[in-house]
Image 1 (spheres, each protein chain N blue to C red):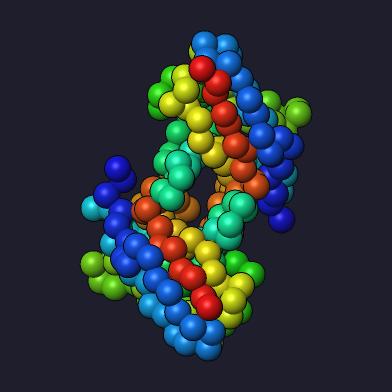
Image 2: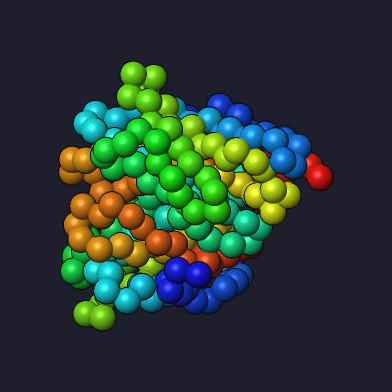
Length: 113
Length: 114
């Protein structure tokens, strides 16, 4: 196990609702990245936070937003949920801005109905 | 832009035989290359990485990968497959410049037959 934890494990939401997913980084890591993994696909990069600031973003709309806290834990917020947001959301932590390795948490399975 | 291709959706191999899972990549600068494994309903587990140095990289659980710059490939290998190696394998790349994200391939399902 990596030491990266995520909560909740599973979540069911209704279209149009908002959701917050949480991630606790591995000790000593100051970078956190979020990925979306749709069924049968590889993970897609959402964004990365380094020392509480977003420093990289993938091709996701603004309704996907995040926070990183002083203890380097993180939240992913998704507003106005759509059916296509149903996926496994993975958090990964690493050290440094140009991170060379990322360690993934177990993920949160989000189902939007 | 950076991209990864895993040309095989499924690889089947008999237990005890060598296995290879293929990966090719495209980046604008020098590549950082990674292999991850995913078991059902689990996150990704890091297997190995290539940053610089020897082209043959050794990783966890007896896996290794060979970096080939001219063919832009980073194939995952293991000399003797185990049934417990059956899982979904992902190759990922990022460049050594300003890109922050890992770009993943679509994954290869490895099945080791007893």
